[in-house]
Image 1: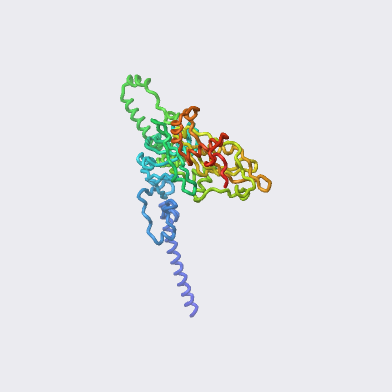
Image 2 (image 1 turned 135 degrees about the horizontal axis):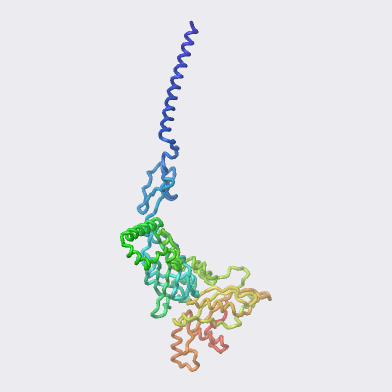
Length: 472
């Protein structure tokens, strides 16, 4: 009797299992039939489309859990792409920056009033020291003509007018020369300077930049051309054959935009922000809002060491332990040849003359190994003094019977050359007038003393010679 009961129970279990299997089989069959009817099933990753933004705007995983998603900024929008279904942040009014220049654009465009606010009335410098008063640059900030270059002390400018068009940016202003008033680096030489206008009368400084040309996308241009051609075809079809034949010889085929502007070598873009950024970059390449680190790095060591001393609020001294000082040698170094550096047209026209101090290192061979501005005069005269000092001859210092390098301070004079002062028969009043026109670091009497010493003429003992070495 036990056997049938056990068999019945086993049979019951089997029948229930078969029912469950049949149920699941039916569900799977219905699912397969539905998929076959609707097409291929979507992949799991395609069921939810991710929202991708730029790296700066994308929140981290922890932020997404604790904070709600950020709304788009006012000047940007989320636009879906056509290929991946993701979203990309498009900035409508980007803030463009190049060096010290920054502009908040409108639709990527820079306006003339923004450039006026950025440039007009500001003290700027021509980084490369271009001396011509009519300068042309391409959209990359490269000089398209020719211009001599000079000292940064002749390259300070002030912009008075700004004119912006689709093809050019034109700046007009004045050029100024820097005249240092005799301060040592530790006395803050930036405050002891005078700016003198050196632009000739009735003339202005003109600086022009080419602009990258902004073109509309090709699709829009193609649609407009197609519409224009369709309209022209309709008009021709409506006109009598005689009128079409009469007008055909006078009409020339429209030239493509590239051939019409074959002489124009400016680059082209469909993005206004790109053209605006390129213009700002060109401005930053050519103009500096002050004597910044980039300007100093481009200067010769003659000026770099001067501004380093100014930043450290000290006076320059050589750091090489092998260089002696005048008070530590047995025999001091002496200047053998005369120091008479040339002037330039800017200093002569503005009446800039006087005396300047330079720190030098005289080698064991009697030549200047290093020249550094100590108390410069400006107006491009210090560069002339450096070249003159390097060509001069010195008697080297002696230590323990051997010539050694020594630090030596030199005072150099600059003069005004004119017909009145060159004539031997100059009267006393003319000489006094010339004295009154000689600004500089030291007195006119000291300069006369230096000239007398250079010409081996007797000089009053009360005044030190200006163009000789000053012992330390």
